[in-house]
Image 1 (cartoon, rainbow, N blue to C red):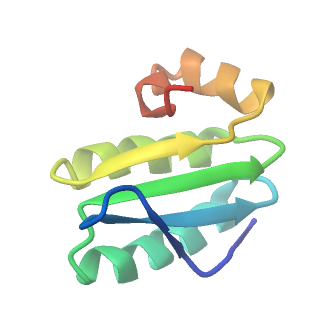
Image 2 (tube, one colour):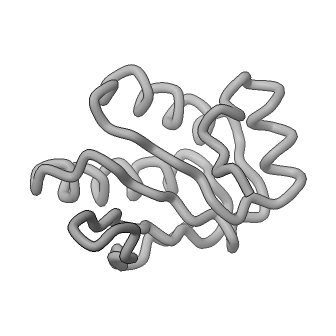
Length: 104
């Protein structure tokens, strides 16, 4: 999985939520890259982050553990997943992480 540069998307006139676009399997190596990118964003004071999973074909246990750890370690930050395919969505539901899914 490769993590591209975050792209800010306008959600409100005064608020910007960075979007991190992920590509490839969300596995151990992808989780490491994601954590690094998020640390940079969180160091800048971001309180909301959207993870775009459009190009993520599947998520394994390391990806699930990473998302769970993000929820626990950064409880003051709002994480949202967007553009999730059915396979990844099913895995997130089984892991009881579907609360991260963006309401469509």
